[in-house]
Every structure is written in structure tokens, then in C-alpha cells.
Length: 255
Image (cartoon, helix red, strand yellow):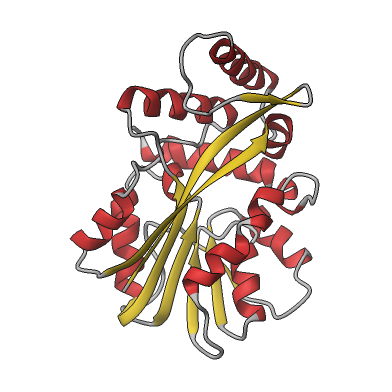
């Protein structure tokens, strides 16, 4: 994969999605999972926290409201500006930058967190290494992401559906992979938690501003599975006449 071309896909996808990340009709999945993630981060007033690939800094804003000093870094200017417009409490410091090359010296943060970013990254292990580098000894790393089905064939189909929805998607980590990567980097994994989430299909597609051809492919794949065809890994079902699907979210915390 050409990293430059993929960076362009990320810029295009998230430039389009900036407004929908703060749309209350569409971002309920993000906001409903926020307390669960903050609980794992366990912010302390006055400590220094970095949110990597922060998007609109939804997490960073919650951590700042808890009294932490927060830097929220993202490569997409439109995302950070949208977050700035929606900040009502304590504001994190918003910074343009890439997860692959964090512009900070070693060991300068008490905690480093990222959410729903690894499945967009060409080298997720390398990004975790960068997060580790800027975290102080004894500090905390917390990662939240989608995780794939245990069956590799089903996981491949999951990624195909996700990429139809958002072309910047690459691959979901297998369950427990993040814990293994952090352990490889010398960290003590303190907690791995999973949550099964059910979501309505159409708001999910609207939030990502998915092109009609991509939306059609996603809908068709789920309809095929409901009719007894190929398994997507998205656990489609009908609820009150509408298509819903499922995701598995995993939070990994380490020191």
C-alpha cells in the first residue's frame, strides 16, 4: 500500500465527515461509549494527557472537563475546527499532526489515548510505539477500537464492508491484538474490555457521508446475509422494518 495515497484517502474521508462527528442525530454511538472509555483512562486533575488521532477531540474535551491538561492531535484541520466550535467547557489544546510522528519529546505525558484510529492506519504497531515513546515511565496507554471476528474469512468480509462505507478503513485488529502489541512494547496490560454494540444502518452511512454506490454495496451485503447468504460479520438484523447491524468494541489499558 502507498502510504501517501492512503493519507489522501484519510484526508478526503474525514474532511467530509467533520460536521457529522458533532451531529447529535448521528454520533450517538460515539457519545454513548464515552463514559466507558473515560473510566478506563481514569483522568486526574492537573495531569498531562495526549489524545492521538483525536478527530473533533470529543474524548479530549471530556478529559479537559475532568481537570486534566489535554493536547488533542489530529491530521485533519476540519475535524479540529469542528471540535473547537463545539467546545463548551475546558478546552484541550488542539494541534495538527500525524499519529505516525508525534511532535513531542520522550516521556512528556502521563497518559496517551486513541479511539477508533488503528483500523485506519497502515502501521498500527508503529503508532503504538510512538504513543509509548511520549508516555512517561509508569504512565497509562489506553486504546479503543473496533475488533474483528475470530474467523479470518469473516474478518476479511467485515473489513470489505467497512471500506465500502469509508474508503479510509484498512483492517480491524483481531481481538486481543492490541494487548499483544502493547506487551511487545514492554507494557503491562492492566485491562481488556469488550462491548457488543448494535447500531441502525442508515445513520451509520449518513455519518460517514458514504457515496451511494458504497451504501448500496453495504445494504446488499447485509440483505444477502439475512437471506442466508455470505456472512458479513456485521450481524445484520431487522428492527421495526429497518436494518441494524453489530460491532464489537474493545478497550485496552496498559502501563
